Amino acid sequence: MTSVYEKYGLKQVINASGRMTILGVSTPSADVVETVNDGLNHYFEMKDLVNKTGAYIAGLLGCEAAVVVSCASAGIAQSVAAVIVKDNDWLLENLHAAPLSVPHDIVLPKGHNVNFGAPVGTMVTLGGGRLVEAGYANECSPEQLSAAITPQTAAILYIKSHHSVQKSHLSVEQAAVVARKHGVPLIVDAAAEEDLQIYYALGADLVIYSGAKAIEGPTSGLVTGKMQYVEWVKRQSQGIGRAMKVGKEGILGLTQAIENFQRLEKVTGTQMVEKMTPFIDNLNQLSGIQARVVWDAAGRDIARAEIHFDEATIGRTTGEVVQALKTGDIAIYFRGYKANEGIVEVDVRSVSADQLHTIFICIQTLLTREKHA
Image (cartoon, rainbow, N blue to C red):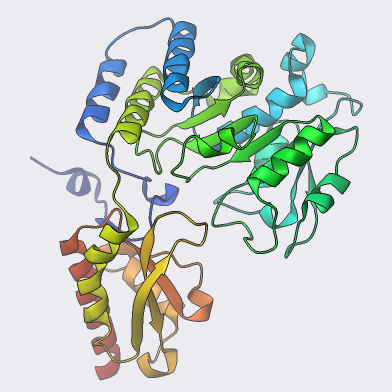
């Protein structure tokens, strides 16, 4: 049987960059795939499906309410629209024409104004909001966040991500205290986070997750939180959410994936270290390379292999190495956020031991070829 790679002339990929949207994010388990298939082959009253799967997920996670959306980015836009529109029927249909007197400022720490593949500000604008930065790129205290809040503030947005500045920034718990003090909701974007309960427990009113990252569901998103706010998010299916609707298969598939995620034992950082140790040992035998274990910058229990290239020794820049491995017979993708420092990271969660060895052989071959060129 012809594979999809052969049929469409696609290149095979080794995903050493983690659960990344540009590579299709993750590979759901067989029972999630089966649930997606069931969803595709049956009809439902969609409002009933949304409400009852949401209630089921809320029961699993111990929160007031939940709703499945099309992706985490859509979750941001719809959550922003929800806190602006609330129960206003006219605004629901006329968000694009909302008068400036309607509170629509979304305050976030300046170090959280990031590009995760698209700018956070774009998602806020899609939801009818205006981004207002608090503090500075290298610091945001509770006092600085509080100072940015005015009567025009519709919500505080907190981006819990490795993309965000980590040092000298307030915690989710501190942001929740500020939100309560000013009587505004706190929205937490926790797209790639692995704890589906902590941010709600810390006081967030809405928490947004990617369904396809840590949870390993189909392409989808999850919004959890307080009942009133989640109901306002659901209302957006008649507003901007119409352009972001999630299918029946995505709703059912993510619900099953969440159940699996909460029930099944997770791979630990220690197990990841065991998996990558032979790979790191092999790399450290190559001239011009130093490899070691590093831990996730955002505090998750994720270990990665960091590879440092001595560019003078290997005779090319790290960016050139990264590009060469992407464009080889097998496309190898690393986490390249620090390539300008001569460093890449290998995320082993979606990589087998055999694939790790393939990565080593490809690096070895590339550097040997350069040496003899």
